[in-house]
Length: 114
Length: 128
Image (cartoon, rainbow over all chains, first blue to last red; front, side, top):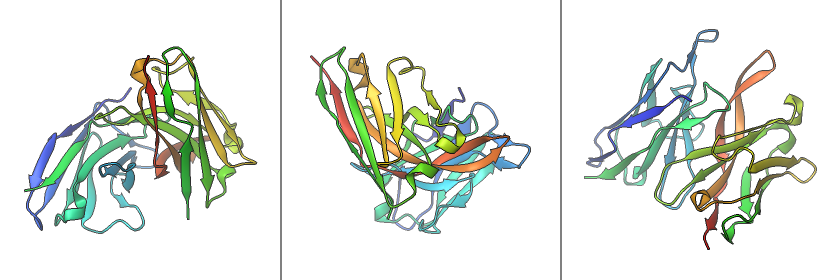
């Protein structure tokens, strides 16, 4: 299985400041035939199910605020929250779907307000 | 509005069985693959299993940790996905989520999927 790692485990950011979360896969999730990275990001708030934020590494899901952006390719990816809002306090997970259906998630990064 | 509602969770003794249901509404259920995930208390997300739509054979896949114990099925006439869990272990204690799988890219009859809608989850506690 593809192993996903994330860093940091947690971070605290001031309101309005940038939050950056990194995700690394144990093998490339870039599919050469369509040049797409099979990587998604989810947000999970306490007591709630995960919510899809980003797919194809950088495509924002409909309705997701544009302060959320994804980047990266191959094995290294980043989720950026450009201006942290109070409602962004959550755990963020990356997930690869390159090896469908052997979906694997990163361990999560907890984002708090400083 | 897409809705997924899980039910059937509860307290069960080790070695016993439980069946979870995921009732869908707001979309054409038969057109979508569905998946089950779980999250142990205070832990991360774990994929449990997956069932393709009938158009792609309705076949199932399972994580190694549940293979041969868990079975996923679907009733497209009622828009319900099921997770039959047998020989339950204390390690199976978790919140179980069902999720709709959106097909990302298909080639040669094989599709990739990511997950755009999730239910609120149902808690399964395996304990004596």
